[in-house]
Length: 275
Image (cartoon, rainbow, N blue to C red; front, side):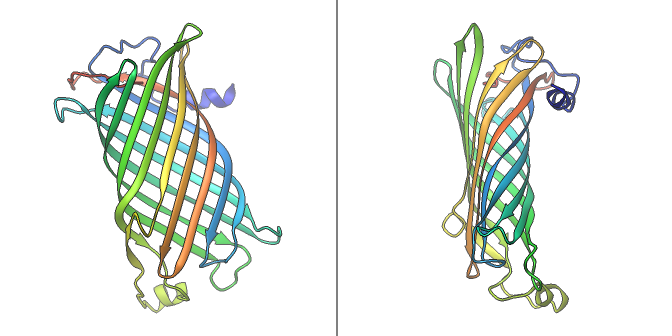
């Protein structure tokens, strides 16, 4: 209960919840935060040819607000995600630590498909900064990760009644499409790259073929008297093959959090958020 209270107070206090907000209002915005833990599988061939597995931790901060674009049918979604993993090799003789920060912004058009069902899709952009550390390596123990990508995003929402309550089932998918990524070259040390300033194709053109990745989020929301509770699963599948180096980071987390709804008095539109 203390943990959920901390999540609740981390959001602005001026909000109204789904339970007492008039969702027919054309100025509804949403703020949410979720935390979770789960499982991670990481391969970084620059550090080791072996997979490392272990525990993953994730925090997701989300906002969504209406715009005036295309007669008010476009919403802006921002996502800030913090991720960290503690990993072991198969023999339990070495550890890796992986983590990073990702910020994304999406512009999504809304279609009312059927009663209670909405679909949103559109372009987005994201930036990632992180790294991996292997405590077994002496010369090059770490690998920095970074990219800036144009994304393709889509969401689906389904509202239904169960046990005399309104529920919402939501699925979201993001596919990095094209951008730039940082990577050392095969056999290149960080001493060569930064001390000697020997550039060796360290900025690579990234696209859906050499970085085939997907990010998924499935949640179910239930309004309570003073909060909207969210439960879900976050699944991120990051892959890359650049400069002869292979990388993947597969993590799946069980998520829990809260959401709040706001009134924007300066914005008008002809549809409401499906939250």
